[in-house]
Amino acid sequence: MGTNGKNMVLEMKDIDKSFPGVHALDHCSFDLFEGEVHALIGENGAGKSTLVKIMTGIHSDYTGEYTLFGKPVHFNSIKEAQENGISIVHQELNMMNDLTVAQNIFIGRESKGFFCNDKEINAKTEKLIKDFEIGVRATDLIKNLTVGKCQMVEIARAMSYEATKVLILDEPTAALSEAEAEDLFEKMEQLRSHGVSIIFISHRLEEIKRVADRVTVMRDGKYIDTLNAKTCDVQDIVRLMVGREVIEAPKAKSNVDPGAPVVLEAKNLTAPKVKNVSFVLHQGEILGFAGLVGAGRTETMRLLYGADPMESGEVLVKGKPILVHHSKDAIANGIGYLSEDRKRYGLVLGLPITDNTVLASYDNPELHNSIFVNEKKCGAVAEEYVNKLKTKTPSVSQLVRNLSGGNQQKVVIAKWLLRDCDVLIFDEPTRGIDIGARAEIYSLMDSLVKEGKSIIMVSSDMTEVLKMSDRIVVMCEGRKTGELDIAEATQDKIMTLATKYTD
Image (cartoon, rainbow, N blue to C red; front, side):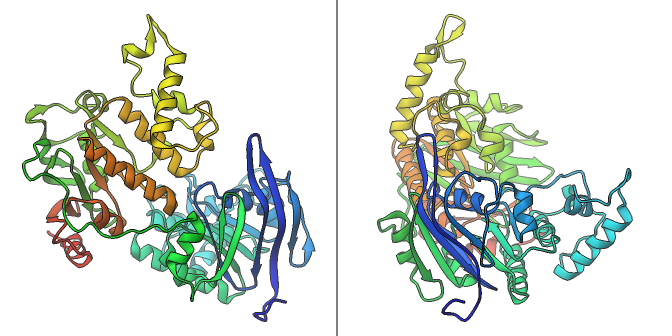
C-alpha cells in the first residue's frame, strides 16, 4: 500500500530495453495506484511508447521487474495483457469503418459457432453504451461517427474486457474538439470512481494538471522525476522534459513587411463544405487559419492543393490565375501541403528517409543518371536536409515509421523544401508532437518565412495560432467569418468569430 493509502496496482522497476543502435529504455521505473490518473510525459523519443509496449505485451524482450496487483508478470502478447487487466486506447484509433459499433467492440470475441450472433453482441454493446453514456447505437457504422464518438467506442471496447483494471490512454484528446475532450474527462472520472487506474499520455500540460494526480517525466529513455500534478508548475514539467526552459509567448506584432507582395490569392473558393472563401497570402507571412472542428479549414486547404475538386472559385499565384485540378498542378506552381495526417498522406512509412525526401522531386534531372535514379545523389540530398533541419536519426536509411512525430514532420518539410515550394500549407503542424519538438518546428517555420517562403497554418491550438501567425483567418461552418491582424487578435475575438454561425 502506498503513502496515499491506496493499493499499488502496477509497478515497473529498472526496465531496460534496446533496439539495434538505440538504447530505448535505460533502467526506467513507473508505478500506478488504484483509482489513480497517472500522467506519463516526455518528448517524442523519450521512451514512453516503448514502456507502454512492455506493459501491454507488445515487447517481451527486456530486463527489469514488472509486477501487477503484487504479482510478477511478463506478457508475451496484447491478448495476455488484456486477460490480466490491462487495455490501451491508441492515439490512432484502431477501428474498422464499415463495421458497426458492436462489431468493432467485440470483433474476435464473438460467440463460438459458424455464425456471428449479432443480437447477442448488440445487446452487450447497448449496455456498454448506456453505462458510458456514449450517445450512439450498437448498429451505427463507425464511418458515420465523429472522432470523439469513435474515441468513446474505443474506451468502451477496452472496458468490455471484464478483467480491465488498468486503462492506458495515448494522446486521447489529440483529434478531439474542446467539447469532446470535456466528455472524455467526465468518462475518466467515472472510471476512476469505479476503481479503474488510468495511465494518461499527453503533450497538453494544462490537461495533465487538470485530470492527473501524478505526472512522471521521461527523457532519453530515462526516468527523470514524478511530481504532484496539481501543485507542480508547468514550466517545471517542461524543464524536466527537455532539459532546458521553453518559452511560448504570443506574437506581439506581425513581422511581415507592409509592402510585401501577394504570392497567393484565393477568390470565392466553393465546394460542398466550403462557401465562397477568399483570402490573400503575402511573401514572408504566416497566415493562420482558426476555427472549431468542422469549420472547413482543412477542406479549404485541400481545394488549394487540388486534393479535392472545386465547384467554383479562382486561385492566383503571384497574380496569375492557375488551374488546380490535381495536386501535381499545385506542386508545379510551388504549393506544398503538409497534411494534418502526415502518416497517411505525407509519408510512406515503410520507406527510408531518403526515398521520402525525394518523393515529390523524382522529375528533378539532378536526381537522375539518364533514366535511372541516382541513389548516391538522393542520399546526399537527404543527408543535407537531415543536417539542415536537425532531424534525429541514426542515418538516412532509417525507415520513417521508426522516427518520432517531430522528426517525421521534418522529413515532410524536407520533401517540400527540396521541391523548392514558395507556399507551404501546414495543417495541424504540431499535432501529436511533444513540446520540445514543437519549439523546433516553430523555429523552422520562422526561419522559412525569413528566407522568403510563405506559410498557411491551420491549427486547432489557440496558443499556437496566436504565437505563430501574422494574420488570422477565422472560419465557421465552411465560411470565412473574419480576419484579424495579430496585434489585435485575442482568444475571445477568435472564439467569437469561430462561433459566428450563419444560415
